[in-house]
Length: 395
Image (cartoon, rainbow, N blue to C red; front, side):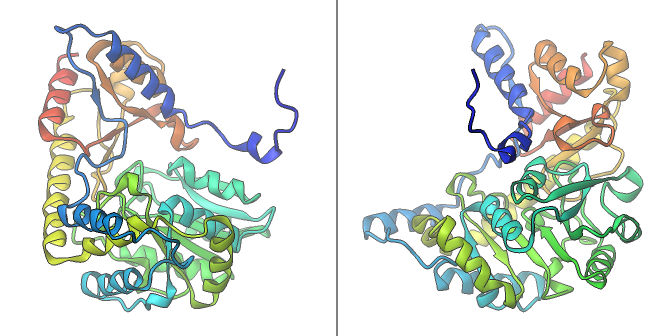
């Protein structure tokens, strides 16, 4: 008998389907013998680099010195100042430290943003495909995530005209991501400005997920939305560019008027982000650390280009060359036909069985032809990507 007290909110939250792939991959790997090929995991979007040495050392100092008490809900001021200085030096944008809120990862940032601006029944426009958890944060705030289908012609991103046409009486916000998970594609700065202007002209809120922004690999992109308006909400994180996934540390850039509301929410829901992680993150902005992150960024870009180019001839095609993050979103139509499977979900399990490669089917990312696409994470070492391509070519 099921639990009788389950909320309607909990019932609406969809499962994270990729975890079934992860479980199946782990089970097959556990059964493998010494002579069997090792499982290659290209299903998880996590850097294979750890925190920079200076960051690790700063965390050790904080623990050793007993710097572990609660911090202010919006984070320690020195970290907010360093993030502000980073916006100035990297993007040429003036973002006051008072507008920056330190959060328990980008997940907490998204939750706080949604709770601060959305009312029950509000509608949020989002691109399809997009990262599945983003729409779950919207739904957890009792709002409605309205997915708008995108295509390769629009780089799998929303167009201003599409937002204008879809805007309705209940529409409150637009939630964008640049660069995007799962596609690795960014919104061109001119289009991004137009999207922000279109949203604000209708009295809406523009929320931009920029957690992969610093992992931009094409100079035509990589502009923060903060450049175009001080009324947008930007989500960012120490997980990807700064390689601190398990440290659970992120931040918000907020309109000044929204800061008090977010502070009240953070005080009640989280108290504060990890104190140790905050003090460690101060070291992210040291000269040696930034140099190390830039070397890693170049490495991620080289891996992504190598893998996308190497898929030619495998039955997997890349309709839009990615320009950021560490993902390759591949059309698997031809490979499904070759192997006699019905779509990307079945293909993902077939690749596990046949060549011991774990990839993420499009089912998690939306409703716009999910059976047509597989996402590969290229955040792993080049030799593993080379071996993956060898196995794909030998199918």
